[in-house]
Image: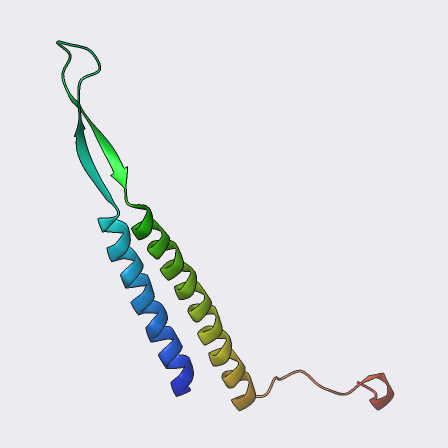
Length: 94
């Protein structure tokens, strides 16, 4: 396992954890005044746009880092263990 691929995967996990924390703090409930006199008050969910944007950026970053890290690992593994396919072409009899 290459060190760079491992760092990319760890950073992807950290970005995903940060996105989860950001998402959990992006919403909260507030009490809304009654619409008419004599009616009960209601609750509503309010989202913080800055935290939603941060969540979206962190999830995107985590996805990119995960794909790049996994591709780097697969490429390294293919270089270490050559394919079992024959490279002989039709002219070589294969």
